[in-house]
Image (cartoon, rainbow, N blue to C red; front, side, top):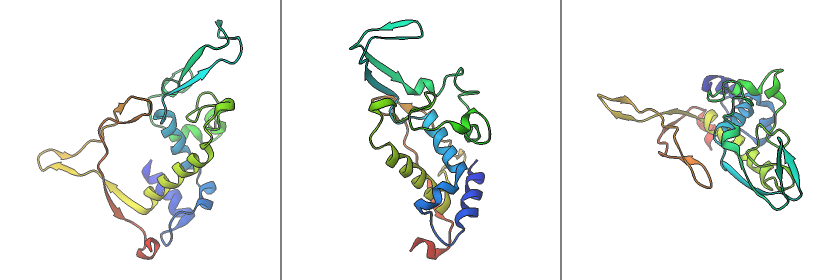
Length: 188
């Protein structure tokens, strides 16, 4: 996965410069990785809402004024919405399948990391560009490895457990070692 993302970045950008915002449109695999990350690890797992009118959803009556909580974390892991939902597969957002047309702009309820409808996150477009740009820069510009824990223990395993709250964060902060991988002039 990392290798495929690097190959795409190297093909589009090369080793003599860093990623520019204008490059993002030419990086479909990078965008697919970002969608998959936001599907499995939404920043805001629970989105509060209030029903503005009497409604019926899936046979349930929802009176006007009812406070609702949309569980985006559970939607991203729902086997009725996603094939093999616990597996990290950016490829589900590529090609001709259902996932290729899914966006995170709030129209596809399988993927709503920024909410949806009239109350969608006002900073959604900026956030999407920033996530793609930062991830692309980190993958393209650096080689990454986990630190050695000890001679007998070998390399540390990455802990992906989450700490629940209003926002999701890693239960154990990530520690990684970065080494430059581009031409020295690209970092100036």
